[in-house]
Image (cartoon, rainbow, N blue to C red):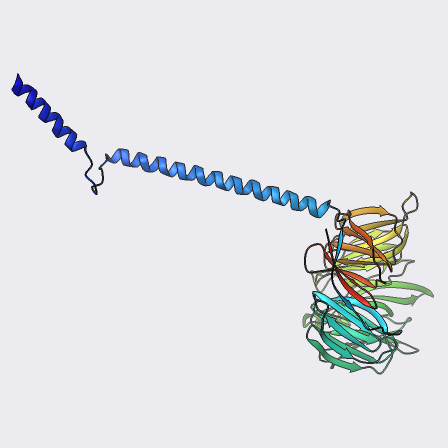
Length: 423
């Protein structure tokens, strides 16, 4: 009996020893148990990753919602002045500012300068003009003496070229590649001449007269790539003054078209004039008539198409456009508001229509903000038609643009440039 008990105890001890894990020796599990452990660990890791991903997606959705609400509806109330620059008083010399690249071009009768984001001059160009006008496209600008004979082509690094014309300059435009076009006139005809960015003349010009096939140009615009010209021309037909919008192609493919003419539109402008045309980008362009807005596409460069013509019954007070938007401000025929602003996409689709009452002198669009302002106050609307900010200034205002940072504007005047942060 004792021997049996002793053997039983020894057997149990051996079993216990076999079950003990020796330090440094991995415990062996049955193959099916190992696979189950791996599967459970993998499922646990996947669930953990999914929870983290879901949390990140929720956070991103919340941030996107907050950003959307802020951009669309939040109205900025506080204006905090940042840096400012006092300008030397220019007795009757100052003319204006233009958005140039990411900063500003200031031009006057005796010179121009490119001003950076901190209000400092990057370069200064000296000249003498009686009535300077400036046009900007991307990183190039042309400054011309209206009714004079000089023009300068500049980029962000300085003046790249200058030219003299034999006839007085009426208007000037420039492409984002530095090609400039100017309207010249004499007592009997008008001419469009073209210049390279270094100021050398391109051996190509267009002549127009009221009674001729082309007509007299009211306004012209070069496409950003410099290959297309859009113009508004008035001409006399059957003793009646008419208006057409015409397109010309000056690329290699345009050589195949007679006089490089690739498209003309006139029937829709019966009884109206088109005082302003402009390229929004290399494809889309817009024509502002006194009773309509027309949107064109040059996706087919040899056959531009009219996308839509939008009738405007009310009196047009102002027009404006950029690479992304085009707008018009009219005087409503009824209601309490003194103005209505309509904003469109490049294809002519209406973005918003907003009535307001504000005595503005100028309207500009910069990015997604629309600036209405006079000499001492402004209103800023976003692309949704909501008021973002309104306020006054203690100096004379010539132009307002967006700054580089969100909520930042640059307010410019003849004697002052000031950075203002809106909150």
